[in-house]
Image 1 (cartoon, helix red, strand yellow):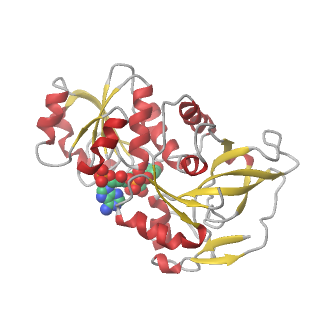
Image 2: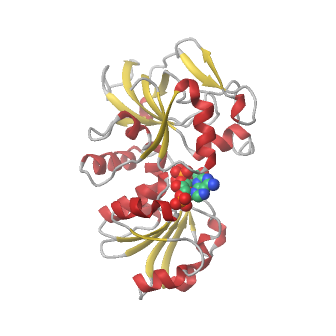
Length: 308
Ligand SMILES: NC(=O)c1ccc[n+]([C@@H]2O[C@H](COP(=O)([O-])OP(=O)(O)OC[C@H]3O[C@@H](n4cnc5c(N)ncnc54)[C@H](OP(=O)(O)O)[C@@H]3O)[C@@H](O)[C@H]2O)c1
């Protein structure tokens, strides 16, 4: 099978396309033919080696944690999937080795759920990590409730855009910050869009004079500094990027939870959540895909289309 690997940390140039043997199947494994693989900012940080303290790598590393694909074989201990099933998965392993920038992967069945029927392959591949993060932030960490107002910093990003939609599905009103170019998109999701920076407190105050109930930071860059001035005194605050920047902030670190992922799949099938794909690249151009993600200019998820 073809796969993308890196043999040392570095820039996008360390990524190379190679031919590898078929993945080996453990008893609880599912062999997935990958149709599309989603890129995440973590792929870049891991490739650069800046997360070396937190995760070991076993070179050569196939990057990527998000996939959408078709079950090609199941191990003898697997009962919940059959050949031909369409799945998505979050296949992060404790040591970096076998990822999703490949034509196939053998992964434990507990990393997969059935693909949403309403999503294309490329849209579905953009879900797993972003969906887990957004759902766990909005529903578990912030417990956003019907009638509340949530402020999402970075509402147009992969995680932010899902958080905006999940919060609205919970019955909340959402105000979202984002670059001007993303405001129409934010409004199309049902959020009230506003710019970062000078005057933010006044703009949010005019939209929510009583203050917001909860704040989610997906953007970093000091976004939470304004919180005390635009939120209610009992505000709940969560961050996926910089939890130390405001006192009492809940740090959210995404973890694999199939109930959470299934809940988001259901929201997609109920037409309450959509994924915006900003760009697709073939497997051979994975280095260009990562370069593009690094520019910060992607308007939506960057996805490897591996024969969808
Ligand atoms: N804690 C966790 O478990 C967890 C999980 C997933 C992601 N994360 C982290 O959360 C952050 C957001 O992740 P994501 O997947 O939502 O990222 P993303 O899809 O790349 O979105 C990030 C958003 O930030 C804004 N941005 C502005 N300048 C940027 C630049 N130079 N580079 C990149 N983005 C820029 C963009 O929106 P605007 O232009 O509108 O501002 C963009 O849509 C990342 O730092 C990621 O590593 C943490």
